[in-house]
Length: 124
Ligand SMILES: [Zn+2]
Image (cartoon, rainbow, N blue to C red; front, side, top):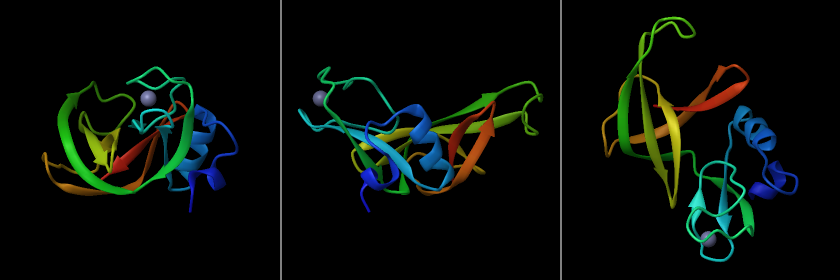
């Protein structure tokens, strides 16, 4: 399945959110230099090209880096949580971790966590 079936035309934050809620991670690949990202961007972070193509990313990857965030227990029930950069093929996405994960761990997309109409991918 290609990203084009889930994303009608240009990848926007709205279409990215809609696909994520359906369990698909959509990224963008630069048609000029091949650089991939895990979230909608207006231009390629590497070469600045605006010629970006929506691609469906794999839903399993490895933890590239992780950090634990401590927040006052307002919005979420836990007062600490782990966020990580997940490497999916060539793209990297920022995600919440369900439980704990260490660098190099293989993780799978579990779903999304909604906060203020901003879904974040949850891996574990
Ligand atoms: Zn590029």
